[in-house]
Length: 168
Image 1: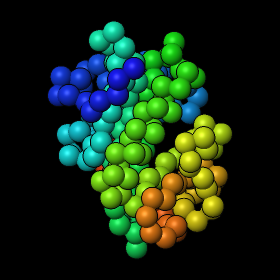
Image 2: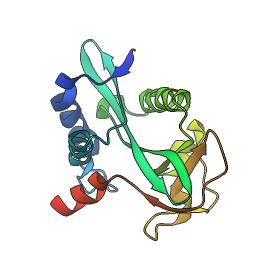
Image 3: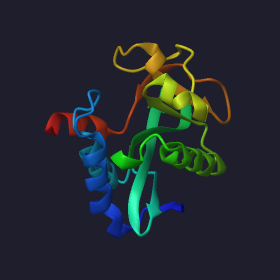
């Protein structure tokens, strides 16, 4: 199934998919779709990829710049959404791997995320306890390094993440 960058006319389909993918999930505060809209609006949606099947978007992944003191050119992964009936079939992993390949090709130092280590380990993400995020247990704060030293410090995601939480 083809993976491609989002087009301007994809925004409502991505929004609807994201809502469907996160509705009822115990780890979701319902901010994922607003985060993507705010990232897009602020210019912080550095990479947005979709997977299509039969003309319908069945998966989406977003990457945005993050700040780690003393480390430049890092990106955050997420939100990522897959059509509920198609989850656990490798769609999310394929989107992540394509995004990582593109960002590495653009010279990114690495990518970090907040998530379940059992889900993201197979894509190369790991936690060594050196990255932190708002007091969260360190095993959920993961990274993959492309170039340069392993980062250490507090992750600061794009303003859209905090703004969506406030607005919600």
